[in-house]
Length: 287
Ligand SMILES: Cc1cc2nc3c(=O)[nH]c(=O)nc-3n(C[C@H](O)[C@H](O)[C@H](O)COP(=O)(O)OP(=O)(O)OC[C@H]3O[C@@H](n4cnc5c(N)ncnc54)[C@H](O)[C@@H]3O)c2cc1C
Image 1 (cartoon, rainbow, N blue to C red):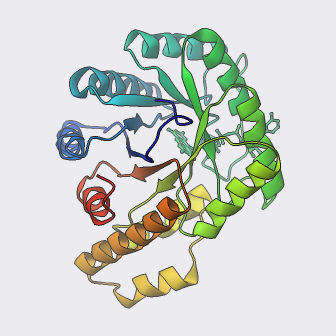
Image 2: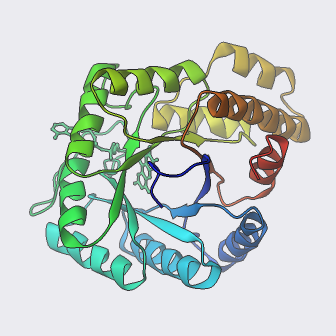
């Protein structure tokens, strides 16, 4: 996958490693359904605990082996030494995973808690980008935040500098936190361009299926919830089916705007469920 040479915008999905057997069955059902739409890649998130880490490595390896779809494995610096991270990168390489999303990760106490350094480890994603680039033949992506990084206190220019630094260290693409306003995405792309960067920035899109859960997720990820959107959800509150339908409608509207703006790819935060993403992809004729 080389986003600078892809002719059409990429379609991709994010999955997380389930904690138990029933969750794993649901994951593979969603993978089968989404595979029909031929995603350009599937990304697998990475958690801080030891068992979560092992599941990421196993699920990412199995996805690559069994579906043939390119897999992007996330990796974070949380609680790991450089040596630990090197070993995980080697495991990814051995499983034919050639693209990594290099992240610092959230502090163990949650996104708002202070960052705790690990002796012998890294404090910032740019150090992990360096390691992945040096360790193997990896293509390395990084995180971007159209509404601002939750810990940057609204200093958007600093977020742009951080992103450009990660590009200078070897990142070849970024994927955004989910957002709901095209202007936020455009502002990020314009700021990058002004600074001389044309880093491809894949738009992360969350099809809302549960409005109550959204408020918590948005707070953790630093995503703005525009009033024009929350009013629409409040008008259908209590009707679960209507909320899902509205989530699909809102996501489809944003996708259309992003495609018109020339986005290099759209990455769906699926929460391991295929239905909403499949409907949006059909609605907008991306597949
Ligand atoms: C697409 C996407 C996928 C994600 N997947 C996961 C996942 O799988 N697992 C998970 O745990 N989390 C995941 N996250 C969350 C992410 O790990 C957190 O948002 C985290 O707080 C920031 O990670 P980062 O890679 O942007 O960190 P960084 O780029 O290191 O930035 C973190 C903070 O440090 C500052 N900073 C960065 N570089 C420097 C420097 N050199 N010197 C001084 N300050 C610096 C930044 O301004 C920022 O405040 C994901 C986020 C996104 C957008």
